[in-house]
Every structure is written in C-alpha cells, then in structure tokens.
Length: 397
Ligand SMILES: *Cc1c(COP(=O)(O)O)cnc(C)c1O
Image (cartoon, rainbow, N blue to C red; front, side, top):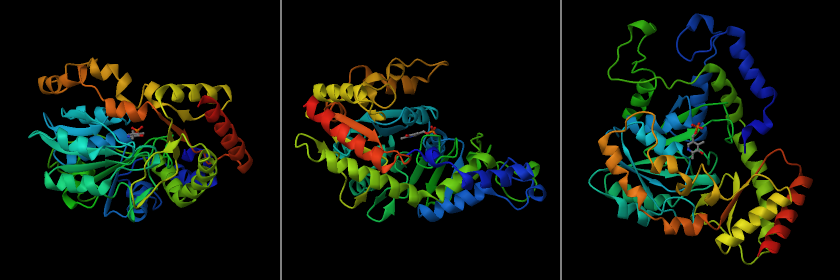
C-alpha cells in the first residue's frame, strides 16, 4: 500500500481511453463515448473480485459509508455503533445523516470488540459498523450473529483491508453493506473514489439512485428520468474510474508483493519475545497492508517511535498520539465544533463522550505500532528496514 506506488502504463492507457472521447461523466452521452464505460466496468470488476452481486461506485470512501447507511434507512436519531479506533470518516458519515455515532471499545484484533458492541445496544440502535483497520479484520462470525440476533444492519468499512479474506470471503462482502475507499493512499487508488458493496437488491437500487440525485436511471433520456426519492450527488467520474479499473486488475499482484515484504519484517520482529502481534481471527487472511504489533506498555511504544524516527524508519504509526484515527485526540468531535447547528438528538446523543473512558481501547492502542508495508521497496530495503526495526525495538525494551 498505497497503489499509487505502482502507477504506470496500465493506468495511463485506461485514462487515455476517456481523454480520447472527452466523456468524463459516467452516465449518458452514449454516442460520444467510443464504447467506454469505465465506471460500469470497474463496478463489474469489483463485483467479480470482491464476490458480491452489486457494487456502486461513489465519489469517496466517506461518501460510500453515508450512502450505505442511507440506503439501509439509517437517519435522524438512529444510533450506529462504531469503534474508537478508525478514521474520522466513520463518525462524519454517520452524523451527515443526523444519526448518532456510538463509540465502543476495540479488542486485540484492533477492531470492534463484540462484547462491547453487545453492551452498547439500545432500542435506538439501528446499525453496527465494523471498520477493518490496517489490512485485517474483526471477529466476523460473532458480529454477524450478534447483528442477526438483534435485528441490526451490519456495515463493513473495509477501506483499509481491500484484498483481505475471512473464511473464504473477501472483506467488504460479509456485512449487509460493505464500503471501500479508492482515495490516493489506499491499496487500490482511483485518485478519489469509493464503493458500496451489497448482495441486497433493494439496498443496491437505493445506492444507485441516492448517489445521483435520486435518478431512477431508466431509459436513455436523463432529463426524463423520475426521482422516486430524494438523493444527493456522490457520483464518481470516468477519469477516476479509469485509474481504479487498471489498479483493481492488479489487486492480487499488490497483495502478493505486500505479503512478501510483510513476512520478512514479521520474521525479524518475531525474535523479540516481549512483542505480540495483533490477533488475526481464525480463518482470516490479511491484505498485508500493515504490520501491527503491541509493545509491553505505552512508554515503550513511545520510546520505540522515537527510536524509529531517529533511525529514519518511516511510515510507522503510534495511533495513540495521532490526530486522525483514535478517539483520544478527536476534540472537534467531543466539543462538537460544527460550522452549522447540530440537531438536538445528535447533541444529546453525543453527551456521553465528555465523560466516557475507553480504557480497554487505550490498553491496545497505547501499546500498538502499525507499520505500513510499501510495494515499491526493494528486497534489500526491506531487509535493512527489518534489521533497523529489530535493533530499535530491542533498544527501547
Ligand atoms: C480512507 C478511509 C475512509 C475514507 O475514505 P475517503 O475516500 O478518503 O473518504 C473511510 N474509512 C476508513 C477506515 C479509511 O481508512
């Protein structure tokens, strides 16, 4: 990760198909487009590779989460359970619909703790959102069962784990709706973009209409289409789709390169008895986009980070001290710093955040370091990195 590291001729060729006709929009203009439908082609490729019946492209991963929730009928006052460790997009997408994000603890998988999810369910809970962080996954069997038992919608944000598999199923295909991001730093990039995945016909139809102003997409005259319900514009362009298409065709190749690099580094770090690696649920196969491990305590994790920096080992993250991915530093959410008035339900629904402690999440995130696995490294560079990491961590412990 990220896919932009290997941007090349295949991506340029797909983009040139679009540039040669000048049809940058995914809908209409049939006669002008020389038979090129990049967004449609990318959707078909996503359906094939991620083994779902329907994929709907949208303008970003954040939009994908909002569109997925809206398509399943989540809205004003509904509670959506989500993890403390994720990307800010998760609560943004929920709040955009006037729904309330209910943050709960993670476990040693670095994703939702099913016990914490169960404890957070109230009569207002409508959906559970699992965020498959850093190339791996949560305990999906337990979460699927829990959601079934409580009649809740399971949303799976696999933006950081495209290419990972759980018991034979690609991540993103397991929940009622899957969401993925194709932004510039993801394993498959389109520059910007996202997709909603589902096997549910009604949800799919909703995503298709909702992401394009409610258009029903029936017939060939866009102006004559009806609007069965309200929508917005979350469309992706043909240019972005063209890049994403070339990239997605290379997913297996990307995962294989990451696995090779990951394995070298993991083997080196396995020599340190004080380190434990994140738990991969039984039947899980990572996308190898990150190597995540736990140090004995917060202090050692901070010392390790200083050492890595001093030794020029880049792209390692200690999310406890990071502004983007962990509840601890989300003051703008806790203080509800909003440009516009927030509804009473959401304000009230978020009051818990000013007092609630997430000591179980702190226990894992405080000790966790996640290192990005790059595809552009040479074998020599990977070896040097592995030995630098080994020595730095040993010194910190
Ligand atoms: C990147 C990311 C998103 C949002 O994607 P954008 O395309 O940047 O909007 C959502 N969730 C997770 C877990 C992400 O990593």
